[in-house]
Length: 196
Image (cartoon, rainbow, N blue to C red; front, top):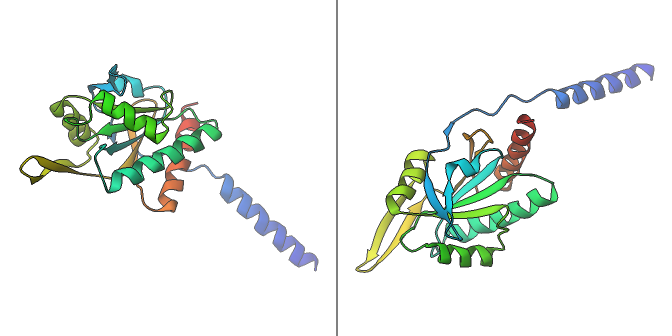
């Protein structure tokens, strides 16, 4: 009986030690690109605004009927969770349709999404500037596809990108599975602790 008690204690200590083992740092996958765009209020928004805190970035457009409503809903869930957890992380949604998504259009979309402007920013700008930031900088696909004489759709990546307070890209996360969402939230928490 004493042997079994000792074995159980050894197993419990091994599990505790494993849980306490520090995780390796998240890799640096690139840098937040230099950009000068506009937020949903029409105020300048540049890459410098993403320094000093962890950010979760997504790429949407307001006329999108497919993945964007899901992405925006996920960001809304994330906003509530980060606030509840006391996180200082920020959310940034880049429009991949800047021709349509002017600051007033984004402001209406943000209001409908319940975005807290102190935590969640929607970004737009000139087509070339947005494309440079999204495609070349964040390495996210985005392309205009004409669907008729005067209409188009935008195909784009539906990943979340996590950046750290120093302006480094630290992770790309699929958005459909709960496990990926939880891994991203955990990584946001890790990065916030890492900067201290």
